[in-house]
Length: 246
Ligand SMILES: Nc1ncnc2c1ncn2[C@@H]1O[C@H](COP(=O)(O)OP(=O)(O)OP(=O)(O)O)[C@@H](O)[C@H]1O
Ligand SMILES: [Mg+2]
Image (cartoon, rainbow, N blue to C red; front, side, top):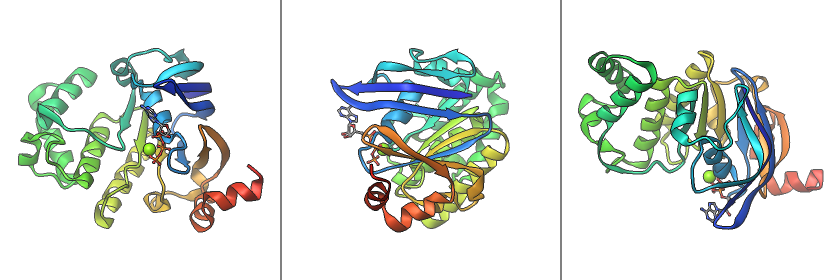
């Protein structure tokens, strides 16, 4: 479904990704881990088409067609959705109107009909109807923003969902809800690329059912099965890098 070939990316003339290769098949679940600053968010944002990042080499292919230079909104239409590490405030745009518009455009569902669906799904993620009439992320806490990102994903049901640290700054109960929702989407067939620093978000997944990739200095340097997450948490990256001589 997603093929990333020798991807080289710069931002402000600094090379950040230095030749990334990654393949994600239909319905597969992949995890990316790695030290701070290794390029995880840059990779996620580049797949989503974020304009700050310049692709200097390589290709991104999605469902057989090249999307390397496609604008972000076209990628969303193709079924790629990103949940941001740092969701930004959007003054003047109400959550409910934004979600109604997105679902209407992507799925052709009638605006009134979509309203009830949004309220129902929002309640499952602990939002009240009145919360949906606030502006996108404005005044929402860090953890609430992460749940709002998940709400978008649950409603859109993308083909490929990229989650950039959906667990950072989230309390234990919210983490449980978020991780269950991620697993539900995966069960429905969504391919998932999850960036995290902690194994706890993977509590609802069988470790043999997913792969973990480790990034270092702008490259994927290791790819293993899910059981490896435990080893990373126990040993830390530096020790693992020393052991394998990288
Ligand atoms: N727009 C930018 N301009 C300059 N440097 C950038 C830009 N975006 C990212 N970088 C640099 O690229 C490197 C990789 O950043 P990135 O955000 O991808 O790391 P990360 O692996 O997601 O880290 P974290 O675990 O802390 O979220 C960092 O050194 C960062 O400072
Ligand atoms: Mg990051």
